Image (cartoon, rainbow, N blue to C red; front, top):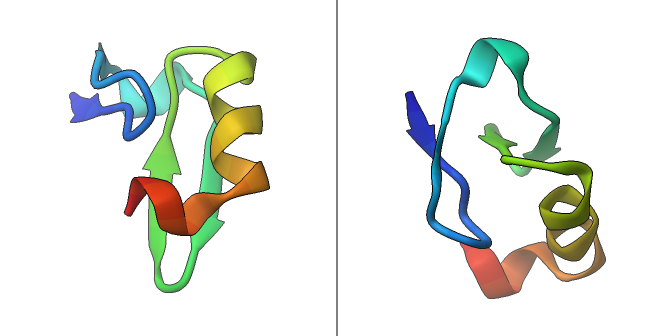
Amino acid sequence: MVTDPVCKMEVDEKNSPASKYGEKTYHFCCPSCKSMFDKNPAKYT
């Protein structure tokens, strides 16, 4: 389990949307949180 950087929910990294930023992969609870992260990843890291 990992924490969604946008909404802080715990998510299963095996079955969740993901984005890579820098050298790290971030996982999200839903496509909406992924979209918010993708627009401004520095805000959530």
